[in-house]
Image (cartoon, rainbow, N blue to C red; front, side, top):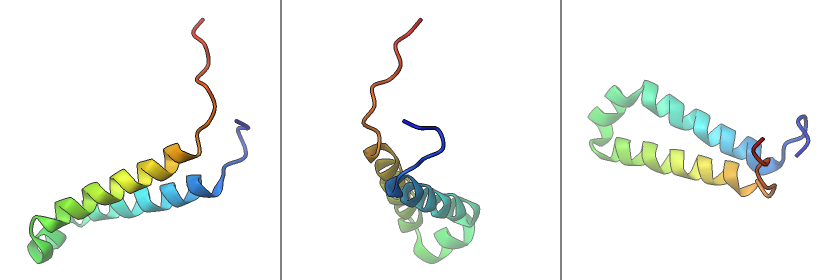
Length: 65
C-alpha cells in the first residue's frame, strides 16, 4: 500500500469515526434525549467506521524480522 494514497473507503470510515467521536463528546445530552439508544448509536457508528476502514485493506501484513 502506498503511504500517500488512500481509497474512498478510508475517508468514509474516518468521517464516520469522527462522528462517533463527537457522539462521545456529547454523550451526556444525547443519553438524556435518546436514553440507551445513544450508546447503541455510538457502537453502530464505531463498527461501521471500522468496517469501512478495514474493507480497503487487501495487503498481507509485513513478515516479522
